Length: 144
Figure 1 (cartoon, helix red, strand yellow):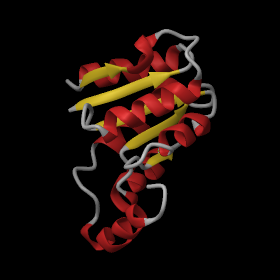
Figure 2 (tube, one colour):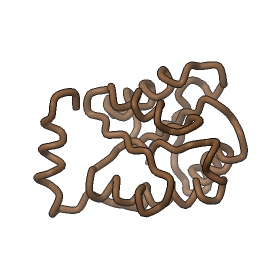
Figure 3 (cartoon, helix red, strand yellow):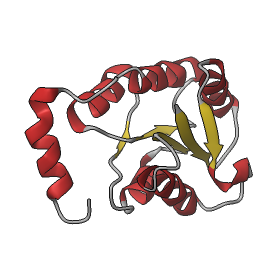
Figure 4 (spheres, one colour):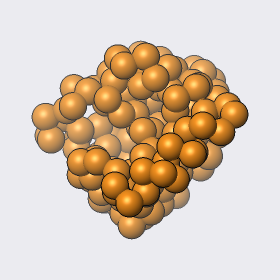
């Protein structure tokens, strides 16, 4: 799978997430070139555009809380970004909401937890068919 990735800082948590993506055989599209100093709104929107335009299958954004990059990604039509802090939330975001961008905190998640959250998000092959109506309605709402 091709995964768009951006983070507004670099630490052990971002390293662990990138290593997991590589180890799992995913192709990583680095938005913002991987350099810090790019504003987090630009990074979030850049990942969102990569997903919405089909240059990436899914996206991962990381900032101090995960919230800002999720908000920025969600400004891109067609993007459903979700902030997740544990595997259950990440899995549910894909399964019940068809989220296509995962947002995580690079300051509050330990590297091993961030990897577990990432795995849970990526391991969902498709949304729950029972949620198709709700997901369709979500995509019909203005701004999505």
